[in-house]
Image 1 (cartoon, rainbow, N blue to C red):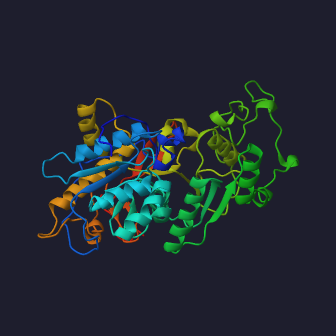
Image 2: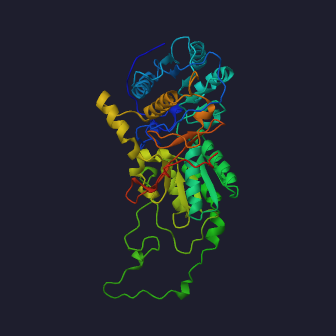
Length: 455
């Protein structure tokens, strides 16, 4: 058992990529959020726990090894939330210690009589620990964003693709969008986004979305997007000009020569620049009379240079914001200032304004910015402290399923969140729109409460 304190590491949307994908670490969470966690919890009975379960709170984090600095900072935020003499005792276990893993750490926590466990960090570790904790009836608040491991008694606190997609689909539907499609990378994030889109459309009575996973070359991406957008049939429907009906160009002073005649995609008359490389791709204006694709909302999932290839393909396939609401992952928030070519596109993430109090308090004590994953551990610990303080008289602890799944949820660093009986987590996210010069602004703010219909 390790009881050390701090360290820092940039982190992204998904705890499972904390060491493997540094680009993703800055994300979804790049604009995250706090009003100091007011856990709107009133306790409540019910639930089943191991007979020996008590007030102690187990903490399962990597305090050594590759993710040690991240784990140490998350532990620091946990202790920061448990900053009163009456807070429940913490029982800290290192999931990366020699000869240990998440399963053995969970076993040690249960043996110590912990009534609830915070952690572990990743999806794989949660898979290891879940059978142990479920058999013992001890609730787990894991820090992964992979909802595939959620189950009764095991909740995932990371900001998940499903939560982001749900927020954007419901917002798009309110604006009259009915036909959804997705063009996604053939990787774990892409498949999570696609599955979420399928599920949310089904739950809301929308027709099944068109979903296509693409390869990683520019040619393959362009060809696939043209197929998804029915480019050939749309192009065939574009009215062709009659050469004999074109009036001659007057050769008078000031006339525009044929070589520089106005292009419909360049109405200011400036010479067209060559197609840019992916990293500097720009999306042209829509071509008049080019029919709309067979969808009015398109979900993307790429980042980095491959997103540049997607932007080029969107231009060639004539898929633009004239007819289509483009949507993407919260990861875009980390580099939205470079995405002016996707102006008008959406991504969903917490309102960063709600995080400011937590950031200020953390920096005052530790003199550096907290990593976004520290938000999750702070929220989880503050929630548990509030449940403990409001536990029913005579009960060993306040960590019952009824208390954890209260309908109104809890307020946190990244906005309101709540737990469902099936292990899934609801979040109140904002919808951001990418500006013409890059950067994002909130166009649909968080509701300020949780939607009870969320599944």
